Length: 185
Image (cartoon, rainbow, N blue to C red):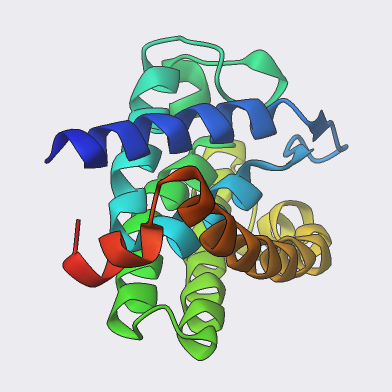
């Protein structure tokens, strides 16, 4: 890992931790938050390097730092009903980011990368939610995935639009993220 990748991972971790604090508790125990938006921006801007930011986010939360929704952290969150979604962030950072990179950051690649990322997050989250609450997959889907689909799709659309503006704005600050994408840095 290069220093540049480490800095990008740290920035993505910090952004996701801040976005996680915009959280609304819901009856099923899975809060609505903007964590997925942070994952999406990382994938769209960094490609598969988003994995490092999401892994760092997961690790900081696992050791107890309050980076998860509602300023929570600790192994209890990782192993509890919400932990599967957070693990899904890490996996989707790698796989979704890889898809976006493979498609050379094209719009179709971005859409596909985000959709597959959502499937990964919902799958890992739903399985762990069902396991930890001893409920059926149907119940876990009803509580932990279905209510979030429309808003997560909206987050994806906003992230795609915002990432275009960020890609255009960064060169004016002396940072050329497109050049970094082309060089694989």
